[in-house]
Image (tube, rainbow, N blue to C red; front, side, top):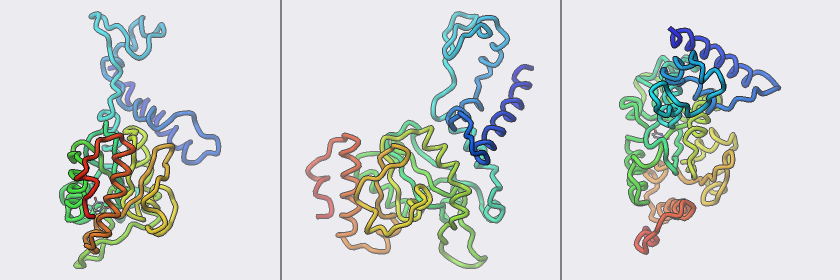
Length: 278
Ligand code: URA
């Protein structure tokens, strides 16, 4: 009963706060992480709202009637779920909502220290509902493995959660438009706020534009540290670029960027790893 009453009220509060954040000069003091947390009030905690010990100021971990400590449901995987659900039903870009097979939210470890950000799903990702599973994705997976990580250790997401539509009967992908990126970006912002990786890697100029709103050539941008909201950000070539340009010198550039990432994460680097593509 209490749960049924609480959820619509929470939805209203969340929607109102989000609207204020989007439209008002005076920002409400609620971070996205708090908003996401509000959406997953654990049922047992909601029912306990009626009990005297919580009404009298018990917060966070509180004693339950059975004497167990109640932990707030605040792990990162749970925090991501309401966002995944909003993405799943998103129709903000009506044309993409019509053309997509499904949305592609993100994959990997919500507690990852390392997060890769790509552009948008391609045809394979749209079919499978997972980012970077096509040819470029397989190359990204190889890069991740060369770094001594598994795909499951890191988190991978895109600026756009829908495949950019292409005219019927045509092949290939198109780049997301600035409007599509602006519309979808808040979902990625929320993902990053929850995951709080130690290092972000932006794959290609479109990912950089989507994340930082900054245009530049990869020659200017890649290979050095930038920052997103205080998180160190390495910019490197998109794996699709490496598929088009197979010169070992280009592979080495990406690898040098990844060596910087490994150093930043204080990961051990073998001599063999240091010499890849030399
Ligand atoms: N390219 C991207 O940028 N993202 C994907 O998910 C797949 C290909």
